[in-house]
Length: 463
Image 1 (cartoon, rainbow, N blue to C red):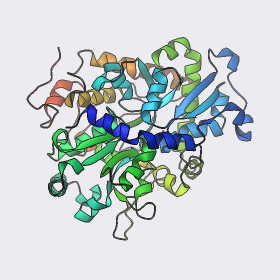
Image 2: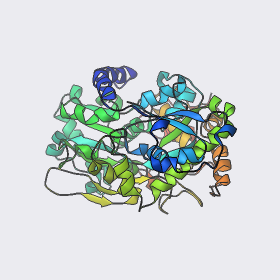
Image 3: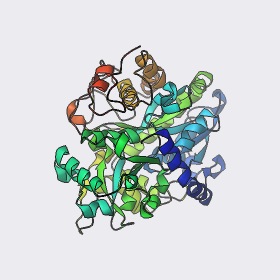
Image 4: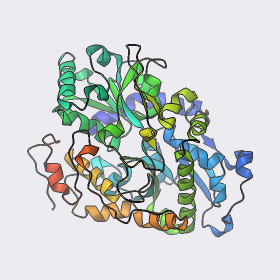
């Protein structure tokens, strides 16, 4: 059964490896280590005017640490009066819990972490986490192992949108192995990565609750776990998909990017505790401004090769630039074991700020703008899989408290950045892999429209 017990089992099985990896890498960057370029930047905000200029900010060794690396290296934290220590976190659970327990002032968290901390999804610690901006959209993918390739499974684009054919292939593969060997991994329970795995499998008619075991494994350990045979597939952020393909580790291939499951989806959110905003409003504004500017820098095509090289440093991802580059620059290879390159050149592989027309939801939309309707979508998935008993009757109020579009508009306005005027949008069917639209005005109807849910005999309703 796909349950919290399975997640905890997976977490325990990899904890020893995670501990070793965390000790092996320089775990932080202190203000005294600032580069000459950063020190040359003149602050436009006096640190003495801020409530808390000295901050400890987390990051996880995946490609989306790029804005944090840029804000550090280019002196953007310093520009806005901040004296920042960067703390390298070994997992997304550590990144989230560091905020909740007060070890970190700010940190990126996976989409779903803020909303689910507010609702206590799947027994999560209830905490008033907040976010006003995304760090990036897209930038993640699902990797499958060599055995799945040898059986005949191929990258999603080769199915040309035919979910039925993919479902037939995956069902045939599952039928020839034991249910106990159907083990996939995600980076955190109740996260958009877990929801993508569930969404994809259920869209082809396979009940993931009954037919698959899912483990929590921190990003840097995904490749090792696949190599030793403990997982068949995993959903993670780059560069840990690219690392698995032929020419690198040669143990798997990229089946699908997250943007092919939901085009335009939010990935990482800059999170703080609600009390941090209340007690340090000026500091928070400085932090968001520094991160917006860093995301703008990462977004420019001419800067992306430099960004990919920077985050390859040992203190960030610690992998060769050839692994960080595809997800950042966009020259993305899905891999395979037939000596063919499956290249897709697209800046949409990872979106840091600028939004292409086919991804933007409204006028003045940009990647760092959070839509509260996306928080509502995450709640529907938590209810769909019974991580919460029902759609909260105050779902919109929770989304408003958790994803602070009001603050973002104010802060972005001070930077002369125009924003969308609405907090909600209807996601068209073409954005999702199964062509199923999402209307945030009917959350209960949306959940009940799915044939496969954690308990299909139960309909969800407002209490």
